[in-house]
Amino acid sequence: MHRVLIVEDTPADVRQSSAVVKKLGAQDVIALNNIAAAILFLQDVLEGTKPAPDLILLDLSFPRESGFEVLRYWKSNAKLHQIHVVVWTVMGDTEKKLCQFFGVEHVIPKWAGPKELEAALKTFVQDSDTAQT
Amino acid sequence: MKSAKQETVPIATSSDVVMARQKVRQWAIEMKFTLVDQTKLVTAASELARNALEHGKGGHMVIEQVENSVKNGLKLVFEDRGPGISDVDAALRDGFTTGGGMGLGLGGSKRLVNDFQIESEPGKGTRVTVVRWK
Amino acid sequence: MSKLPEMINKHHEEIRADWLKQMSTAVRRADLISNEELESQSRELMDAIASGARSGELTNLDGPAWGQARDTLGAISTSRAKQGFSTSETATFVLSLKQPIFNAVRRENPSDPAALFDDIWKSTQLIDKLALITADAFQASREKFIARQQEELMELSTPVVKLWDGILALPIIGTLDSARTQVVMESLLQAVVQTNSRVAIIDITGVPTVDTLVAQHLLKTITAARLMGADCIISGVRPQIAQTIVHLGIDLAGVITKAKLSDAFALALQRTGQVVTKVNGDNAGKRTLLRREE
Ligand SMILES: Nc1ncnc2c1ncn2[C@@H]1O[C@H](COP(=O)(O)OP(=O)(O)OP(=O)(O)O)[C@@H](O)[C@H]1O
Ligand SMILES: [Mg+2]
Image (tube, rainbow over the protein chains, first blue to last red):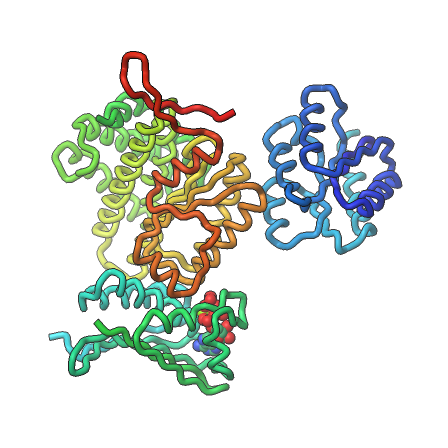
């Protein structure tokens, strides 16, 4: 987990989550605070003008925008769909179910706090590291 | 002759609710209710049968053709031996639910029929009687 | 006139291939039927449909032109009744022809939405009729008619179909109870994700009763779809159903409803940025064009 894209509008949550991923070894953390920017970023990744992140940490609720748009874009392209996505958001059962439909394996509720995020990411980092070697 | 006809339908599973609806539709068609009235009767039956199943732990529906001096009607009685309703007025209020429903079934079915009566005794059960006149 | 009969006749091999492919991905009850049998049944039926279509008659299937199709469906029903299929499984075999025919219709009318509506509508009705013939034949081939089967007959459901890029339709046929409504609605949401659709049309023409439970599931689905950026349109709300919904006190404000599936489709095209415009053609008079709005 070298490069991480954080899509998150709440500054405090950006601070918390980037601290967590850095602690787990991320060198390059990009934080974007809106969906349009995130989608443009992924377009650049597809065009090869930006390097692909190893992980996207995604919030779902944004004022006037929806994190599901990022999931739609991610799922619509086979290359993008290889990037791991972790959803970290305030959510109910509906959001969780929809995330499953998109094939997001890791859906972590924010109310559980950054400790929970770290615990979940830890197992995930091990998984992806063993998968890559 | 089919006058004074009566039939009892058990309500123990959700497919019984479907059967109860079909029965009410058949009867309403036989009695030549208009399409709108058929739909109202069937929908009210669906709500009350489901209440008897979900809140009343099951029971039965009695369906009966009735008449007064001027007209014919279809009478439905839903009876269960469930926990009963402690506050009927509250239960009738739109939006009131003790489950995860919309809380519209009881009040809604009242609006879909002409006569509506609830008898309920906490701990003993509930009986809802409705009539729609032609 | 509609080119649908001609299209079915001409492309029946492709349609059949598409159909078999779909059946192999859907639940096929491999425990009950072999690949060879499925292959031969689909060939017989498709041949019979093509021959019926050759007559040009697609609405009345009682005539001699459709005799072969009726006989074939009768034979298929009898053998499936013996094999232990249920009524709805047997009818689904026929109903699953919808998507392949829709696909062919779309290939055939890439730029003429008016003809497309028309053909999609006609083919829906055709397949529904064939499915009903099947269900009837199936029932008749059973010795005893028990209540449970009558209920199943009411539970026929068509799968989610893709009408156009970004537009799905879910034509619901039959009685909805709690469990079935949940399954049907979830399959719609899943299809929205799978096809990256922006509009989902839920057609309730074939639903006999809309009570608070069905309404609640509908509203939940609409909300969930909206969360992920898809609009739902409810079509086929018959006047008696609309009245009952009002009496129940269900608030459909904010839900788009249309009387007919074709109206819903037209709106869906508009919503997805595909507009239908009438322009004056150079020599052919009025032409209908489909274009993407920039
Ligand atoms: N037969 C019954 N036995 C016991 N309680 C009942 C019965 N019928 C209704 N109730 C009570 O009255 C409440 C309101 O009933 P109503 O049918 O209006 O709403 P609901 O069943 O909760 O939801 P829905 O809108 O799906 O019908 C129920 O939540 C339940 O507490
Ligand atoms: Mg109720």
